[in-house]
Amino acid sequence: MTHIVEKPATAGVVWITGASSGIGRALALAYARRGVGVAATARSVEGLDALAREAGGLVRAYPADVTDAAAIAATVDRIEAEMGPIATAILNAGIYLPVRAQNLGVEDCARSFRVNLDGTVHCLVPLLARMGARRAGQIAIVSSSAGYRGLPTSAAYGATKAGLINLAESLKFDTDNMGIDLRIVTPGFVETAATDRNPFPMPAIVSAETAAARIIAGLAGRRFDITFPRRFTLVLKALALLPASVYFAIVARATGWRGKRD
Ligand SMILES: NC(=O)c1ccc[n+]([C@@H]2O[C@H](COP(=O)([O-])OP(=O)(O)OC[C@H]3O[C@@H](n4cnc5c(N)ncnc54)[C@H](OP(=O)(O)O)[C@@H]3O)[C@@H](O)[C@H]2O)c1
Image (tube, rainbow, N blue to C red; front, side, top):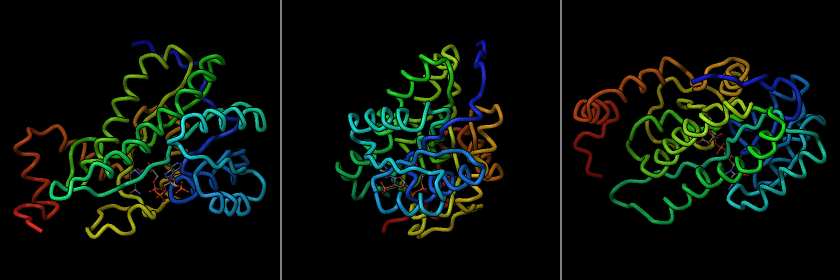
């Protein structure tokens, strides 16, 4: 396949979804420190206003819910009218709802799919149209290393993150020819509100600030899959290549899931 992305976006507005907390917030502050203008989206007006105050002028709040396609299209219109063309979009809004076979719930699954999958598509539609017309722009879809293969409690979350990896890979065949630089981000564990309540040990966990720095450095590089901390995510990638029987045995033992009945 010919890789003909003409210029990775290095200047211009950065649009970040899920910017009111965690990785998205750390990304917004890191870009602002580099003098880059940021359009910050999430549902929490308070969270975004606090972020904008802390960033001192370079971050502007564009509150919206990614599950509302029309609101997201209008938000992209507003950002470009008020701040200029979006050079880089980091589609990071996401939720993690633990799900187990014993309590599989339609609404938990549907909510995860709506925010993580539909929400990302709602952002991609206006971005691809605009960036395609300009033949310029960079889009990072924040998935997770939990998308490589099934993990305990991840039936809903992991399904969305695996879906995002496949979605990005499929779109990349076209975006390469459209002059759009499309990436996937697959972090290991990051210290945020989403992982705060996890009752299990989280190996190689990194801070949100480290995650933001790794994403920004990854976007300046050329790798499609921006993954970190590599000592952890590469182990998960290697496990994903194993035959199912070996994979389930290793992961059940490593996570304490072997024989688990509660
Ligand atoms: N933390 C980890 O270990 C880890 C690992 C791998 C991947 N990730 C991924 O990284 C991304 C960020 O996660 P995080 O750990 O930083 O979690 P977080 O602190 O809980 O942040 C999630 C962000 O998404 C926003 N959001 C949630 N629902 C939304 C909606 N319907 N519309 C718009 N924004 C919405 C939240 O803002 P509002 O509530 O204000 O809307 C918040 O800003 C997620 O996609 C997550 O799956 C995280």
